[in-house]
Image (cartoon, rainbow, N blue to C red; front, side):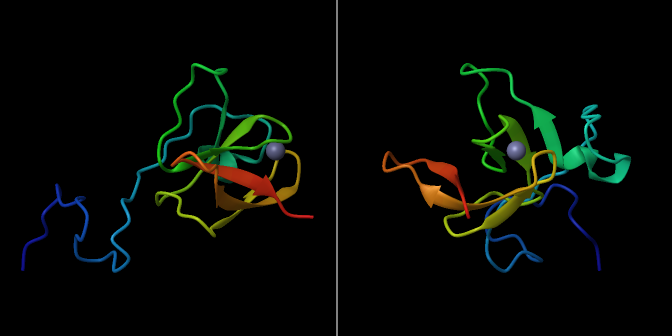
Length: 101
Ligand SMILES: [Zn+2]
């Protein structure tokens, strides 16, 4: 059996939900302990384009990253400001994070 290292297209075996998976890197987000750093990055402002696996925290404007692309209904947690969020439609074909109280 061989594994195809380039198999990350939709429907690839191993991800039954067909979501695209991402390899996260530590990009130097020092506000959280080292093992969590790769899940966050600083927002570059309105011109900063978010990847499908990234959500902007509406509270502290930090970008929360996931190993999978986000879908509506996903829950996420922003460790820097301890906010819980859920992914919702922005009514424009996009997705945004909404704070859960
Ligand atoms: Zn936050």
